[in-house]
Image (cartoon, helix red, strand yellow):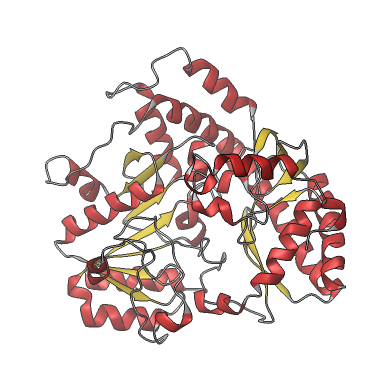
Length: 440
């Protein structure tokens, strides 16, 4: 039940949702957004705060599902948009922002010998997989259970399978993720549990000669923000090299959050290909494939088809250039500070759980972490998250919303470079009250 003080708090949002459902499928532009305790309509945002249509103001940890690493209305992004607004919004041809942003990516990202721009993370993953298959002349892909690589048929597999369909941990089933998805999509994908090198090794030893690539998030952000075990990514890299298989890091979330060079810089493991999105555009739609020159250049003379009307559009790249300039200032000090602030919040939430006797666990890193209501003391792979108390999480998120804290519906937190120590204090005070009610 909603906290008593929240009565009527979201009246206008609820009315607008009813209206929206009469024209917009589901009333929202992405089904994920309809899962919030209260799907809110917003009308303004600044820094790390949002204002909804009922004039409630929130400290925001959703950040547009991750892209707004600089917060809302950052002056450098605003300035970049103002400069570009009077120019053509797209050329369908070359312009200088393309190579300027690509050169910045080369300086920051270890694997980025060459770069290609797309508009969404799902597109970027499709290109990476096609390149890997063309380069190796193999068809199979090995992915990790619980990892999300976009909503398309070829990758929406074993993302969040139900326990009864997932199969044994030692040989997980390849499970379709949607109605209407073609069944033969599963034929070209093998699945291994996250953080189990031994089981990935078994698959590669059995079918390695047919596996084009291993794809994974370097941190399992979409399935609970679970960190890789020490040595896990390094071992996968060695296995891929042994079997002539490409390693693909899906850094749509970890890119320009975990470090300037993403998970590959942080963990010291350079993949053959990597995909980036969200934070890289500073809030504008942009994604990237980066990788080895000989693989990437297959699009030009190697027979790999790729295209897109809005690839490299000036508006997104202007925002990206501004965002990358800000994030890389002083050797990445702004991003390091954002991770430190987020780590303080993460540890504070853990402490409040102990204080109120609420069984919770926080996982992930400073700028992307998650809260789990669970009796487990450690979460290793996706299946460990199946024991989470979803009802308790929902009540906590609703209580937090009533206290003016906006969090994603799966309990995921994103922090930005504009979240301050004072914001963290206010947030923890709000959570203190919310968890106290939860424990009563």
